Amino acid sequence: MDTKTTAMEIKTDEYRIGYDPESSMVSCQGSLRLGGDEYKSITEWLEQIADANPAKIVLNLRQLEFLNSSGISMLSKFVIKVRHKKNIEMVVQGSNEIPWQGKSLKNLQRLMPSLSLEWY
Image (cartoon, rainbow, N blue to C red):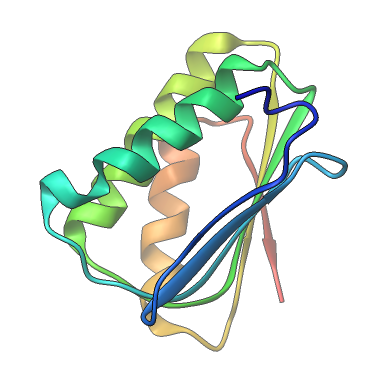
């Protein structure tokens, strides 16, 4: 898959994760309550996006109502991968309306101090 030119989406009844290569935006919606191993395909997909070395990755979580601890771990590992690349700017967009995001997204910023957090 060439993530520079290919839009991609992972969609179930519970959640939707989409990637728009034009804006380098990953958008997550719904509820992610998967088991640890069930995140493997999402993790591999996110790694492909990072491996394409876009100048910027925007992670839009404003409509992600729930993310369990395995999902937070997956996002943390993704942020660390992007941090190691050193040449990718990362922006995480969160919602003030969704309680889990406040503390959890601030922790992502601890993992990557240059990460920008935007609240809506």
